[in-house]
Length: 173
Image 1 (tube, rainbow, N blue to C red):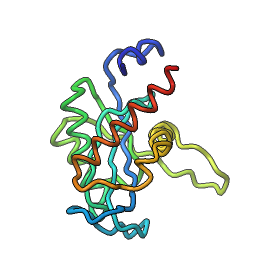
Image 2: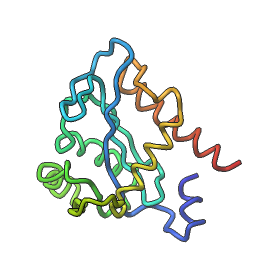
Image 3: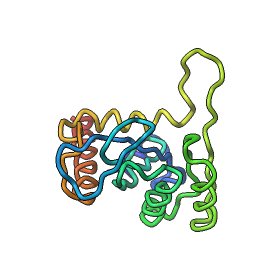
């Protein structure tokens, strides 16, 4: 499905660039793997995703919210690279500096482009970064993903995939 969509948009069938980000979500039940994300003041999990330049979901990893993006980002990057060895680089926000950049370079031999914050006070979209945020917005349309209702991380990852598939099917109509 994703490769056909990529061809329609005059892109190569296999992605060469991924955009990575995470989303902290509250858990609705007693789960085995949750933590406190101090930056967002949420006790729950993080959904880490990598998407291509069209917003297609390449990989997802769910983990405790207390694991910082610089350390957990490599897990979703590895998963994306295993599935799509055509990847040549990642784009990430400033939360992925240093550790993530080094691990992607050393373990995968790929580059990481860190989006720079815009300094003036007016609102702007960051180039490429809005694509992953739009994917999170699409996932937000699924009521099942409003919170993390799952007992296991694997189940939570699969519901993210199902939410994405559901949205793609709505766009096809």
